[in-house]
Length: 120
Length: 107
Image 1 (cartoon, each protein chain N blue to C red):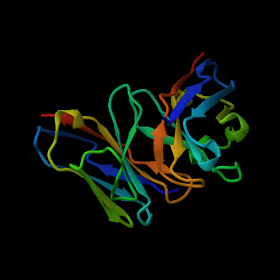
Image 2 (image 1 turned 180 degrees about the vertical axis):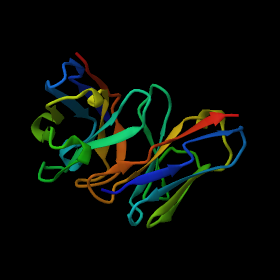
Image 3 (image 1 turned 135 degrees about the horizontal axis):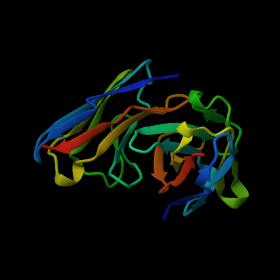
């Protein structure tokens, strides 16, 4: 059974940093690309970032302006999102989602999310 | 970046109705389009990918069509469990993007 478990969320001050993790199990991790998708309270889904199977190709939402970095450790079956210069508008539930193929694709499995709150 | 526009934003319908949600891309995306269903407090669930391919386990009352810039999600006979929010997503190129969502409510 495919499982994606996010962690690392919490309350952080504006301007602060946070690192999210996603532990994957139930499938061969390095056969798939991965994504981060977020959802602000009461709002819709926003794609944040994606990475291919070996980390050689990454993509980011234009709205992030270079503040976030996606990475993966295939030896640990883990996906990460390093977030810097956090703002109130980054407050959201952050989902880890598997891509349907090694490089690109739709999101076929999702975790339950980790909540990030940016507040002073 | 490719912008995805869904309509309507919200819609009221009754059990048994046929419902269609539309999604338009700001540029051609071939058939690289997915539809997701999300219920309150839950993670999104994949319904359809490649514009018209039903994900395994999804009821056949759900169908998708379109290519290029215009796409539709149709629910042929609404069931009580279908009242939820629906999102389209393009995965043609980075940055991927979602539509703003359609909230389907009980009339």
